[in-house]
Amino acid sequence: MASDPNVLTKQGRLLISILIIGHLLAVVLPPLSVQTRGPIGQSPSIVTALGLIERYSQMLYIDRGYAFFAPDPGPSHLIQAAVTDQNGKRVEWMYPDREQHWPRLLYHRHFMLSEFMEEIYQPPGPPPELRALNRDEAIYWGEARKRYEHVRRSVVDHLKYENPDKEVAIRRVEHLLPDLIEYQIAPIELTDERLYRVLLDQNVQEATSE
Image (cartoon, rainbow, N blue to C red; front, top):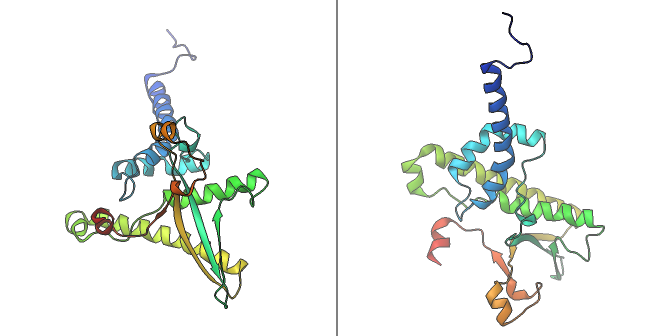
């Protein structure tokens, strides 16, 4: 008896199942990489898994971490720029800035840039003990640090282009959300200066000793 051409073979069903699972991983892993990021960088296991679907998710532009759209978005991250002229006069501002970056799309693009810098941040290193224990992880650490420094340098170079003959410096700033219980006891504005903290660029030993 001839087989029904509309019935998938076992191999065909298996292939479709693999493709569906792969697509779901491409959707889930990028935001998961944001949630599993710690003080010394991203989770090595998540990074390994991302490497399998990275090109596919980038092609479809689904490689974003949408944590800031969630019910509990967590802190946001800004870039603070300081420009000093030859007379020592310094001007500082934040990226993004709701008053300066308008229309809203321009604000959103600057927000994506500041969040991207936080997403790829890698502390100086690697620590000596990591080099001794896992050479591959130490190499990855160094490459991730180079990537961050390259992006950071490109931001500084752009600001120098926009502000010729002036000294430019930038730093990462985290904008915290007030704790619900503390906010109920003593409400404060979301723009209160106490909710902003500078993220220092320091190695793991220095960060853990504070």
